[in-house]
Length: 178
Image 1 (cartoon, rainbow, N blue to C red):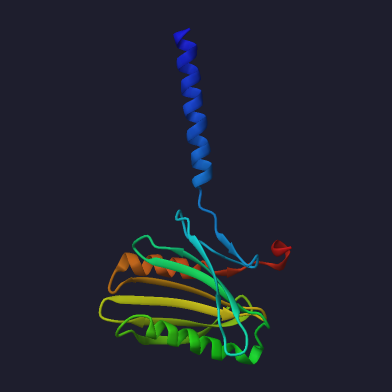
Image 2 (image 1 turned 30 degrees about the horizontal axis):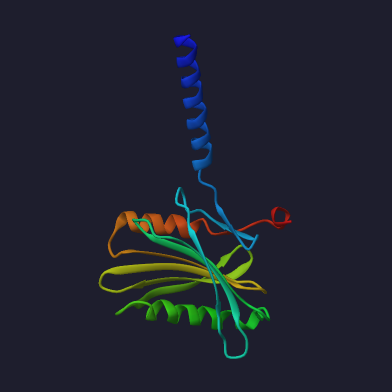
């Protein structure tokens, strides 16, 4: 009787640990059903709000993971009327000003145009005396998609985590969206 009880306990322990392992396998976070980004093993919290505008409001959804070595966030800003193709640069400029004004002494160190999937975007690095911000953003006809990572200036693990996170931002193939 004791042997079968021990065997059952061992079986139950193995079953529970395998379930826990299968649930802890990192899965990319899908945003708006059209983009994904990899937070690794971290589970981001989701913040939903509305940004008031001069003529109309915009819905914002942000996913945030605040674990070292880098705070990571990704989100969308979707004006209720959509985004005109010609307005993309204005959105990038606005986000750039937001990054620069987000912390005391923050200055843009570099920025360059990029493409994420087929969408035009911008990549930014900003620094102050203590902090570095790396960011990528792009616009679609519906929304601005942004990803940022913040880490201690000069931190190699922080830069590696930020670079991996931003590099994982992808546009999903249209077949997987449907």
